[in-house]
Length: 436
Image (cartoon, rainbow, N blue to C red):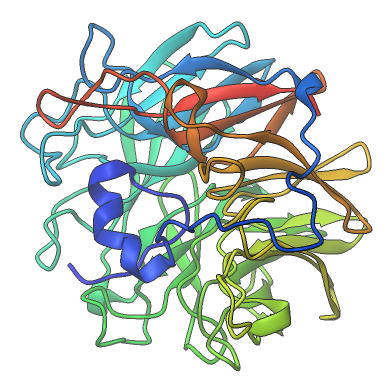
């Protein structure tokens, strides 16, 4: 299985297979450069707290491992774990037994309830990204699914879990030469009762470097399962989108991790009729490269992050940028080369009370990631540096808010004896909260 995958992770097992193509090597935290303060502002008053630590496949819970982005509904948190749970005995093996993932509800008090355990082939395995609610049912995307000839894990599915906890396949991607896409990821966006999303591979532009073929697609799917490809990326207009879309005034906006004029990624717009336009092609260097997170729209402008600052001759920790709808680019913040203020941002930015909030997957005091705030003039503040262990590590999901409190997930850290890989113990991720 030859592919590259960058947005978030699939946990310890699958992450190993995809790390090399994503700039995912651990950033060394260097000494403080001359003339800079030894530490950035770090406000202990933010009240950081882990409210839930996942236990994986066993310990009587089967609650899941490696949580994805959270969704808020009626004051509760909902999400999926990409692995773990008690299901999938024959089907979900990747370097060992993992479980196929779960769908869960979490109260802000930390009380967790399992809504569904995914059982694996021929149905859903390894859900990726957040979940979207429509009429009381949860819709999401999954890496695996029905077996396909070319890839024993399948090319991905759109799934639905209804109010009673029953799982349904809404659409199964065919991948390869079929041209409908392969490896969907991110949160589905709902517009006029239709879902829109992206696939990382697949489409009609065959690429011999991947067994899936193609540079990825933008697709539309109805709740009843009718799928339509809106756009096949050609490389010159973008390649390998790894984040979901956003809707603004009836138009969809997204990013690709590669492709464009300089093959370093793009920001694009696309109408629901399929008319695509490249708003910006990243050049590397000062404007960075490799946008992997969804965009955020604020006051008619787009905000996002990049993972790499290629061409600077320094470690590539990434940036936060602002883009006008006409394509005017402003870099608001460049993460420092020593990683102290964060590195490799992979989550969507959250607009709250005149500030942007986000996370970095690495960097900070212990190189286990950060939560940061950023003013619209580019002033950054570290709200929390993850310390690993019980504190959590490597946040990858988007932040969300309930009653002026921020909530998010980490892909690592948490419960030290999380049961995984057929009896071995790892830490399987957390849900945390803090005050902005």
